[in-house]
Amino acid sequence: MKVFVLGILGIFIGYITYSMAGGVHKEELSMTVNLEKPQPERYQLRITITNSQGTPIRLNKPDLPWFPPNELRMIKAFRLDSEKTPLLKGGPTADFGFDFFTLKPHETVDGVILLNPILPTLLEDIRQFGVQINWYCDVQNLQVTCPQGEKGHFLIPQGDLN
View (spheres, rainbow, N blue to C red):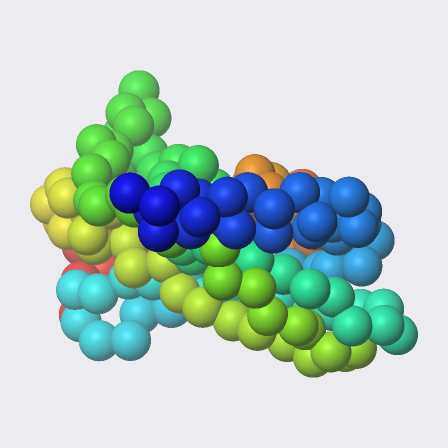
């Protein structure tokens, strides 16, 4: 029990230290988002975050947009039908705790959001209607700016599975 309490206390102190240090300021990080199709019937968003300042920035890996549950907040998907019906969301969510790393000046880090697991009807909706994937430049615990704008979308035409 003592080890558990000390572990929780250590995580809490680490987060307070991070918060009191000012966290990350919005103008320091930029984010780009691109839709990729690495193989037939597989879709993903590639997200790149760049430290656009001349000083290192300390980040918490679970705050990155491709870590659950951030990916569920960052995207919304709709059928290209007359009602713009939202796609069902699914997929695992988890809490990864704290895992800090330093992003050096002008260094980038990127990751992917795999769309198939978090949008279980994606392929059927593409097959029947086509799909619009909306993304938002709004990551809950990370302040970023997006040269592409505060939000954007990608269209996957009806039947585009190969």
